[in-house]
Image (cartoon, rainbow, N blue to C red; front, top):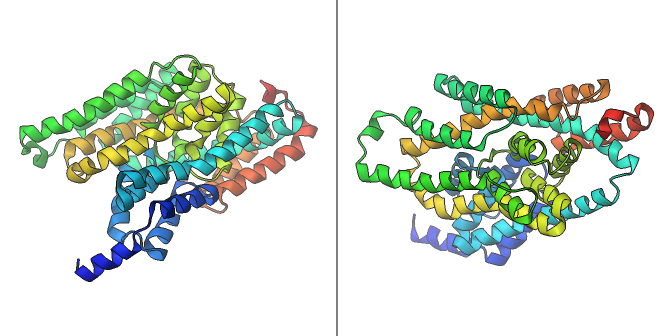
Length: 403
């Protein structure tokens, strides 16, 4: 790069206030899910403002895709990190989550206050099957991109699927085991065997803390603020791509194991997360608010968003250095393909709470078809489901919704 280009880039470098303003706006107006948000950042930060060049953006997108964390949120933190180091990452992280946090807390407050109104039940009666269809689409997209024609990946998928169906819930340690086996199955190639022992030791030392965190965070208690933080921190370590793919994982614990929420409350929380701008994992804020009010919302939000921040700030230099290393790729691939199997096994348990009659079945099937074909934005589908619910509920009076 020439001296002129260095000078030009320095002149375009934003201040921390510029970063805060941009990500506040994106968090407040960014609808459409992770792909749309990532495209907004490319158009704004690379093409319009020229804060980043193409190579920097592409590297950030690759890191955000490979590491646990909601893709768009992690990409935003990466952009702040590249632009202004750790202060820039902090500015982007807080600003990106601020507007969705406020909106979802307001929605949760209204939900709690008017939970007994028939209009509230009707609204989510129509929305819930749409949400299930969009979860199925997200899982399908993840599986199609992840498994491909790799027999080993399909083996991990089948094993995770079978185990999940057998125990009828998700096991957190399954992901750790999948990552460890992934280093053996997917991380074996001729280049890696030639690596010096010292480098392999360094790589193992970066994975052991992650395993310890995931294992210890799995023992969250029953509804305290600290338990909320620990649970959502663990969940944040296991998010890959769209936040929707963790919904079955959340349901397995929040509803089935800890009994923090009912099936209906949980699906309502996911719906609010979907229709809000910003990352879909803001669903955690709604869950936390329902359980412990504003302190619970703060704890859950901090828990779900801290892992992507940590991965970006602490692991990005390591990933840049070792991203071609087979052991690192193997661990991440093992976890990812196991996630697909677990999701396939648990999505049924989510769906049976939302689909209970001919209308909800029709809504789920029709919206899945439209979502796969990309005919309508996800938020518009959710809005249409809400309208249908408000019209149909007083006439059908489905008693199963109250269960």
